[in-house]
Image (tube, rainbow, N blue to C red):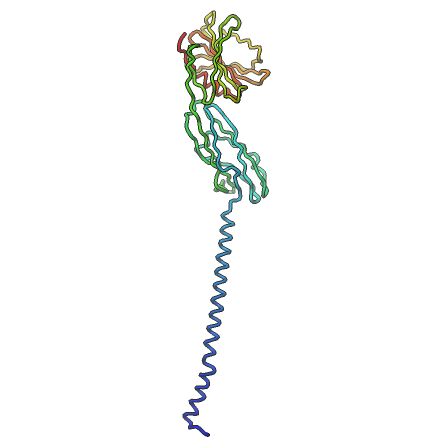
Length: 305
């Protein structure tokens, strides 16, 4: 059966629409979906990779073994703090920087930092903390930072700094009524008085010591002279306990004084001899505590003759 020319022309067109037209959009849709999935996976991988790199960058190259350290000292005392850090990667050209609040009190032995530090190696630094004899009681707090030295000088800290808190305890006033004088003594020290006779003279002695450090005791002795002295230049010191190394005239408070450095069987010691109100006062202690002994000597006040 032959169809009219108009209808015959329409049918092939319809067939073409039925078989061909739907296929092209389907390919485009499939391609679009696949592209979207690939882009989404790429973005996710990028985010994960970025987060991984960020975490790697945020990880500090060192770890302090003890990030917070507290220390109690009295004026005139010194002590060492051991600060240990572990390197997470190979490091070189390092330096230590103390915060301005701590700089007057802390000296760092950083000789070990002149060498390369291997990954996983633990390095211990010695921080020498010293308090001046005339320091005011209170708290000093700051940070100790490990930094890398570059061509342009020092850079930022390699990690969060170590925190160091130094508490300076105040001294206590002690009135030795029996001996007729008063002195300032460090906190946490016990005070023991004693009287004895030596060479026909009555000696009043005051011993200042920490309960667990009797070998570092400081002794204040006083005696009334049979023949008054007008100057310490007239004084001849015979000390069978040690060999004199140095004799330095000085003034402690309102009193003329001598500092005598000697070596004895128990180690080096320092003696401060003062002439006050016709009486002779001696402050004697180990050389390691000479600053404390001097502070005690400076505070001495005669309350009765």
